[in-house]
Every structure is written in structure tokens, then in C-alpha cells.
Image (cartoon, one colour):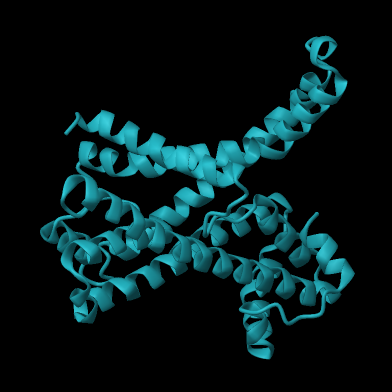
Length: 303
């Protein structure tokens, strides 16, 4: 064991490195929505009138994409954890987690017998904060004209204008993601240690990371544990973690976007009602791509 600060920094680097690798490989981390989504939703609220349908369409696409990302993350992390545990067992002669520690992990995911719900809500705040960091860094880079500076750097005389233009495009396309994922990794890694240091009982619960932990716990305790109430409670906890991660981060993003666009309070209050009506009119489109691909909402969503 290392000193607590070193443990926290190593965990942060581990998270940040993994998230950056996911980004550069083109993968998506569940519950981490693009910063433009909330702004598009706030714009639809402000316009009102005929854009109510567009507002529900944007939200349905968000929910759908997040569920797809969560399903993909869970579908990838479970076999990956099994493979890592198998390799570790072959090399070290034991599972990644002992049965005792596996029981502790499983208990820590129970929705009512642990701090899973508030921890998942705190993780939602961290996800939102990381998107703010990413957006701020992108705005700062654009304001300082860094992409133009890279394209026109004197090194272009050696490597050529085409290479510097390519580097400029790569920088502009990834700067927000790099800033957001790096800050997310740092905050996830440091939260628990800061709680221990300050005496405040805080921790993080992210749906993807918690699924991996539960997989290691099951492997360490034996698959027979999957029939126990503790395992079923942990699975319910992971479902709640997903809802809290997504719900809290998106709610905060929408509040900020509404304030930035100076949407009147009474208009903002119509948003939950509009979404509820839209959901009951066509609940299936929140889970499957069944709505017509109209050009205008499609263009607005990707603007």
C-alpha cells in the first residue's frame, strides 16, 4: 500500500488514461453526454411553439444514445473483467478480489444498505462538472486561436502545410474531450481520498466502473452468489446508479443552458411537462430509433 495521496493520484491517472484511450479509439463512456445537447434542448425550450416536438425528439435521442452507451459499456466491461481475472488467476493463483472483499463490494452497491444513491448523484455532479471543464477549455482554445496557431506554425516549412492543417483539425476536434475526460478521471480518483482526508463520507458510483467491480466480486465469490439477495440488490443498485448518473448530470447541464439562454422561469417549468407528455404519447422512441428522421431536428441535434 502506498500513502493515500499517491494512491489517489495513481487512481486518477488510471481513470484519466483509460478514458483518454476510449476517446481516441472512438468509444463512448456511458452517461457522459456532449455539452451541446443541453444547449440544443434549452434553445428548443426558448423558441417554444412548434419546437415542442423537436424538444421531445432531442431528449428521446439523448436517452436512447445514453442507454445504448450504457448497454455497450456493460457488454464490454463484463467480458473484459472476466478476461483480466482469468489472466490474473493464471499468473497469481488467486482471483482479483478475495471472497471477503467481494462481499464488501457487493454490499457497497446495495441501494438501501449503502450510500449508493447519494454517491451516484455526486458522480452525476462530477460528470456535469467535467463537461463544463471540457467546454471551458475548448472556448479558451478558440478564443486564443490555438487551432490557427497550430496550422500556421513555422514548423510547417519542414513538415508541410497539409500536416499542420491536419494537426490543427485533430486539436480542435479533441480538445474539449481531452479536457473533459482528464478532469473526470482526476475528480473520480480524488473524491474518495478527499473524503477520507476531510472525514466526510463521500465516494463515487459510476455505472460502468460499478459493473466491473461487481463482476470481479462474483468471480471472487463464485457464480453461486448470483442467486443470493445481495447480488440482486447490487444489480438493482447498478440500475439506480445509471439513472442517477444520467439524471443529475443532464439536469444540471439543462439548468445552466437555460440560464445562459435567459429562458424565462415559467417557460423552463414547462419542460418537464412537455417531456412527460411526449413520453406517454410515444414511449418507444425513448428506447428505439422509431421516429421519422426529419431533416431539421437532425441538423439541429448535430449542430
